[in-house]
Amino acid sequence: MTDLDGSVDTLRVELQQWVAKNAPKGLRELIDWRLRADLPGSAGSLQGEEELARAQEDPLFKEWEQRCLEARLVCPAWPEEYGGRGWKAPQMTALDEVFYQAGLPRVDRVQGESMVGPSIILHGTDEQKDYYLPRIISGEHRYCQGFSEPGSGSDLASAKTRGVVNDDSVTITGQKVWTSRFAIANMIFVLCRTDPSATKHRGLSYVITEFTPGSNGIEVRPIRQITGAEEFAEVFFDGTVAPLSGVIGGLGKGWQVVQSTLGFERAAAGRATTMLLQARERELEQLVQLARSNGRHKDPTVRRELAWAKTQVTILRSSWMRTVAEVAAGRNPGRQMSTWKLGWSEYHLRLGAIALEIAGTAALVRPDDPGYAVDAWQDVFLAAHSGTIYAGTSEVQRNIIGENTLGLPREPRVQDGARS
Image (cartoon, rainbow, N blue to C red; front, side, top):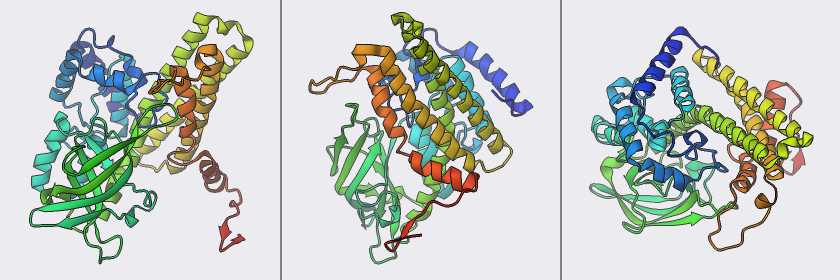
């Protein structure tokens, strides 16, 4: 990878030495940790989330988790006073790279680490920090998000979920949608309207409560996707009682907290990108192995397509490491992010088609049984299509690159029924 500075080089060596000394024997062989099925945007991974969840319950993983906790390698981007190490993007990238090269998992608290914890650090009271933060680090609290609603996706400030304030609680009633991590979560952070008479931005509150499907008025309805997986769900609240002590930032001040959380989410997406890139590299390695095992590598067309894929992955890695260097230098890499998003999503879309060509008949037969599971390479092909839509469609990214980076004329827009 690109050398960022001497301190990061030193850190990388120290991490390699720590890993060599502390990795439990046999942990690498439990599953291929480098495929990272738990990542945002990892739909289509060759590794299922159920397989990952089983591996994370293995005693070897638990031993590794404890050693990472003792070394403060869980939530290391948090400030030291809250249990972290205060690491920035270059240090976090070094950590991810070292663990990936060793074939080992990073103990990640996902939304608790990247979104909720930093929001509590910024907006929470001392009591809230003392209560919630240690439980995120330990893994006792596992979070999912309750922001989007059927009519409030991009415009979160128009959320209609109600929160009625009582003496020491908030009673929540409403619906959320596109909630990920619901299957493993036991906590949820909810945006609700506690003051319907206030303007839409001022009447919102950010509430943390236990996530208990089937009790306390919480109902979960998983959303089945084209791959057969259920990564997202609708969540219904019917008189769910949340503690008033779980209101972060104060009643009616939820919008400020939400803005911070979304900012932290964007920053986390950047860090997750390093690991997602690593997973894509591993995926390509396995596709090459498949081509060799079934003889398709003898086809010059297949060899050409695999050479293209290797070239694209190398370009993506170089592009991303340049972005990391920009962040390390204190510069805003905003324009590069559109190029990166377009590049990896379109790459994965084409890779899915290449995979079906190499895998052959097994990847082309449609499974029809109830509760079917698609072939691993079918999953890559089907899920890759969503990558060109979420987090900004490919069409939108092309407009951004053309207008903001290349200085091309703006795309004609429709205003009041007329093109402008």
